[in-house]
Length: 372
Image 1 (spheres, rainbow, N blue to C red):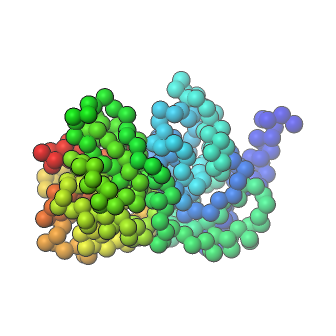
Image 2 (cartoon, rainbow, N blue to C red):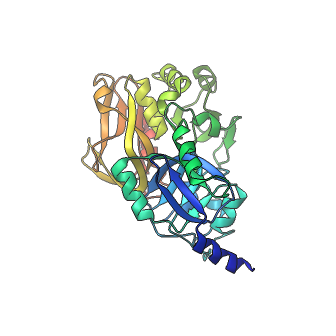
């Protein structure tokens, strides 16, 4: 039987499946690695950016449903990687297409197989998305090997610890410090990036502002950071539950007032915790490239790229310690903070926008101005 015949047989038989913790089983055909994975099922409404989404360390522990039905056309190429690997636990799509783009270096299916990441195609992603919107994010077991029965898979999903209370940042952080390559000289100001799952485009944009960039492990102490005498500190994006990162919250508390700070996504949530606030779960998270956010200081609206399951609880913030600067126009959740007593601010969305619109890029210039 040739490869095409096998492909059609897999599509017809739909032996692979996704088992949700509520008992729902959704069948499809395997179009990635022959592997099984546990994860939280989320949906992303972006129409493009599959490469950046899958290689974003913030998606560690998540099974990503793409609402765009036709996936794979652009293929995979190293220039679009946001890290050195695929971090998503799995991919759920309607249709897997062959690569048809001059920039493609390999197909999506080949990239998934190379990184041992399973994927299902042929599923009703609209129905799955509606289920998540109505019932919330679910734990699930993706079976692409056929070695587990649907009943066993449902039980595995229910038994999994999930992402609440879990520190995934230390799993995806760089083990050793490194300098991001740029053309800036040794006399240029240096930004220390605490890597909770940083994306490469954040580093590119910091370098584009004229900074030298040193990337540090997530568990670096305030003393280790300050020993570098940085002009500023970036708190990066990252996966899972911010409240589980007690070490990061303590480090940030000791950095406040000693050096200007900017936080993105998980870094935003950690800054909120360091300023005395609390975080809580969103029903189904924000994942996509088209989320409207309002700047409360100027009234301007930005279309933003987002990827988070947790949020800063607005009611928990002390108005004397933190100002809410941005809110989501979809659900009024906190999208930006500024410390009242220290040079520090943060954004829940991704100003580096890979993938996504460029509305929020001026945030990096704002960070540079803060250092002056």
